[in-house]
Amino acid sequence: MEQSRHTELTFQLIVESSPNAIVLVNKEGKIAYINSQTEKLFGYTKGELIGQLVEVLIPARYTGKHPGFRDMFFVSPSERAMGMGRELFALRKDKKEFPIEIGLNPIVTVEGTLVLASIIDITERKKAEERFRLVVESAPSAMVLVNHSGIITLVNQQTEALFGYGRNEMIGNKLEMLIPERFRDIHPDHRQTFLASPKTRSMGGGHDLFARRKDGMEIQVEIGLNPIGETHDQMVLASIIDITERKKAEVRFQLVVESAPNAMVLVSQDGIITLVNQQTEMLFGYERYEMIGSKLEMLIPARFSSDHPGHRNGFFKQPKTRSMGMGRDLFAKRKDGLEIQVEIGLNPIETPEGQMVLASIIDITERKVQERAAKKQAELVIKNKELEQFAYVASHDLQEPLRTVSNYLQVFEEDYLNVLDANAHKYLQSISGATKRMSLLIKALLEFSRLGRDKKLVKVECGKLVADVVADLQTMIKDSNTTIHISEMPTLNLYEIEMRQLFQNLISNAIKFRKKKTAPEIQIISKKVNEKWHFLISDNGIGIAKVHFNRIFDIFQRLHTNDIYEGSGIGLANCKRIVELHQGEIWVESIVGKGSIFHFTISELSI
Image (tube, rainbow, N blue to C red; front, side):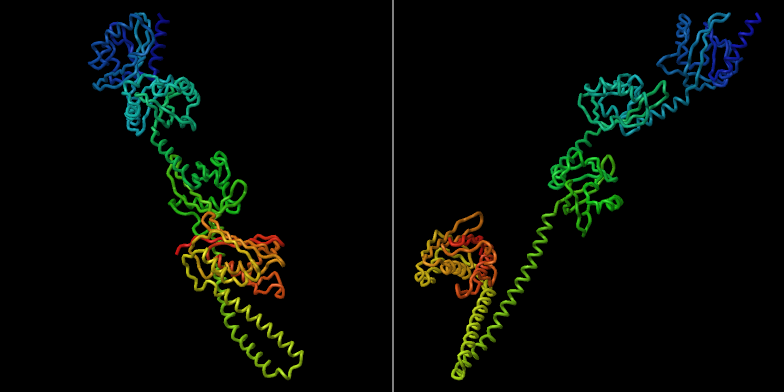
């Protein structure tokens, strides 16, 4: 008796110390005992509840079926949770309902078997769950809550819209229903890996992820994973974003970049190259994989690379489309270390990885070389014009004092002929000869400077022009027994007077520099080569040493003394100027003792 009393007190102490409400109920449904937590939870005193049917603690809409459930429990009493899968509610003394969880335990007492109900008020948990559900529901992305077995327990409206399933079709089913078949087998392993080390992260780690809609269509997605709950009941909340359109846009962007005629480089704010096109590979000599993921400074000469991060940060503070390095010469560095001069256009680009800059790079090395050449050419043209003007003025003005010297020399010879001795006569003859040669040189220089001053472009039958020149040189040709062969000639737009002088100089030179005891033979040929006419005048004369091929076209350059071949040394210089007037070139081929071939080209000029 004493032992039984001790056991009862021990049981009461245990029940009273429970943090949950404890209610002991017999087979008839009457409350046999409650603890103080029950009084607090339901608002009744022990005296008010003990002996009452337990249905007093249950909302009226459930009391009708409750005796049946109780009878079933006592038929096979065992420890278990009550109402598995169903929401349970209790009723307070003030008639307010609240959600509960109930654990049932059969207890054998001297009065028979009782059921001990442990009751937990889950009102706050339900409120938290409802807040969580509302947050998930209002998310702009599809949200799927999955338990550790891969069962879908919660989805939001965006999930229904994205996958085409109704909510009831997804909840309670395996997550693999939303995954393409080719990935389903491996997915449970991925899930277990995540649950073994749960933390918020992106799924897939750089891999393309795909999901499968109800209609079988695959979509490309981004997935964020968040662990929810305790370790023993870990769940995963997956945030799913359809990036199909973004991927299409990325592909279009890549195609545009790839097809650009310029080198294109996409760079992040920290200077990492994230995209290049084929033109970039060709320009810099690197393979694509060598550049992507590397710092942009690999493409910049070392003397500029240290300042470049500062320039890049300045751009990202005020990002806008503009040229880089306004007013400065920009240089890039190829893989082989060669520097190239470049023009760079900068465009800010918004990407999922943040703002980047797309640089369009043009190699302007050749253009710069041409610009420098054009500048030098322009300077040369100006200097040549100044020189021509000086030669014209000098040769024109020198004629008058030279004419005065000649006149006085003639007067001196006439008036003092009888008083001069032989030496004086010899000196006067030398002065007279020098004066005449100087007069010839000044005349030649004047003609050279006047060349092209009054030029007029007209249509000319070259065959008739050459025939006229040959006729003019008939005496020289006859005296030298020269033979001239002329091929078919074109009709061209030419500066006729100058072109006549060109042919006359070259034909007369071919006769003049003939070999002794050999009758000159001259051939004049023309042919069309690309967009120009190519003329050749060949002879069987004395020839020219190769070392003189270039200098013979310079003014006052002579290969022979005046006592062997007379001349001013300006004839071929005139030929060169005339050819250049016609936007052509002149050169010579020759073998000493066998003859020469003078080539010149003439462009087809428009009148």
